[in-house]
Image 1 (cartoon, rainbow, N blue to C red):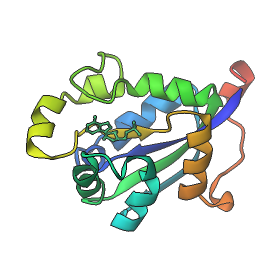
Image 2: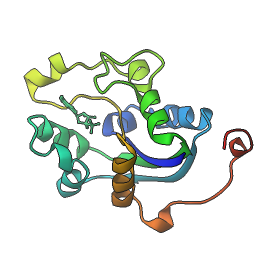
Image 3: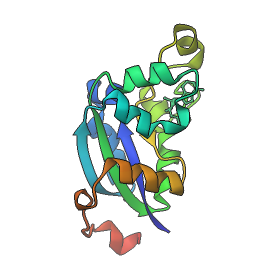
Image 4: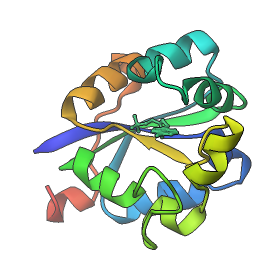
Length: 159
Ligand code: AMP
């Protein structure tokens, strides 16, 4: 039940100065950050990360957005980490994301606006969709030596 998952703070989160606010939420809920780095993705790497979406009509805009500035990659560990992090992130479309979620609290972009313009939805954050994706994405983003093992005080009460 202790899982690891991949989170990316997308270029809009970095450029809006929301890195600290977002990371704080994961720390606050008792999740453990076991890997963290800032990376400016190129198109080739974006195609690897979003392999499942390359053929989709929104991919071009998504790639443009994701390679327009650096992202922060986080490896996050915790009880039911994949599901818990997804719940905290909220719906993919910020307009639909509930208040209290990261997208619902810090963004409001809509597909109605972006689809017409062929641009990506600015939704601040990526989080692995399931345990299998999390494994693959963590292997793509982090070397084994970049993932740390240490104890947090939360583990006394949570793990
Ligand atoms: P996912 O792997 O489902 O998290 O999707 C990855 C990213 O692709 C999302 O965070 C959005 O930026 C983008 N995306 C997913 N679905 C759509 C869609 N229907 N229209 C536009 N962008 C999308």
